[in-house]
Image (cartoon, rainbow, N blue to C red):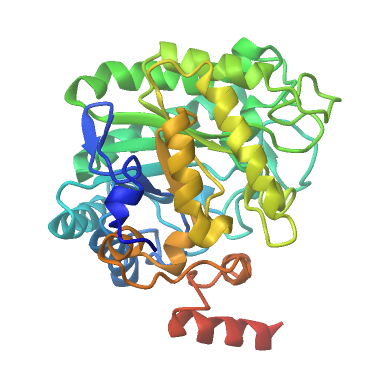
Length: 394
């Protein structure tokens, strides 16, 4: 590094940013990363709390708490978190412990329903019949029931002390499936673009009215292009060719409903994984993510845009992030796997300490798929031992 301090070299990256009614002290964002270490029933455990306290010590501007299910039957991970009245005190504890270490940090809860990706220990459900055979096809009322649980979960998040929520509308889960052109169901939740976007847009509108006036931050993570026939980022149920016109229309409507931010992603882990998180052989897929942010920025209005796929760039990530911030392609910079590799990234950069960079080995993915506690098996001996045990068991 040159004689410049990190905050001088990457001035934009270390500068504050207003997100809705809150101010992030820098542009670093921890993407939602599932640790799969909650208690039975989905309450926050000591290990869950400790992971977020470490992130708090890292002084990230914004942290998104991992994929919190709005129903115990909607989990994709056997030890996943569940937000409900029963577990509310544990989430208050998580927020309190986080804020002790990083009182100015923005803490968002990502709310999700796993849909057809729910585990066998839960209840897989689907918006349309194609695909996983044991998934229950949702009725019109059941979709509305899920929407009401998402709204309820948002109010629980506010009660727990979170600064806002992230609607998970990405990565092949329920939220992404409802948006797809392949969702051709013939009720108010499918077929037309208006019907397929009703779930998200109506929810944002209601939450903006009930919670937004208090500065509660509202946003969503979406997959701009999933890479499957009839998926998000295509134009009809039979197409697999990328066409972002519908997704850009959705983004414009989100902005009109008063959403505060948009978190850009792509692909479906386990299906088109490398589109989501580029690996070493597919490193240059990060360029697609940069392009998706550019496309989103054209229609995002006042919404802040969070970019993704920076972890694969390792020590070059900050230079690319600074450039994209200066060009106005993004407002904030998301790190997923890198936050597992080194939860202290921002503070280490600022102090000149050596950073543990993600090497994109996919060990954390193996742990997640293996339904055990998830983290970095390269730099943390706990997860290294867990990976060894997992490899011996298969």
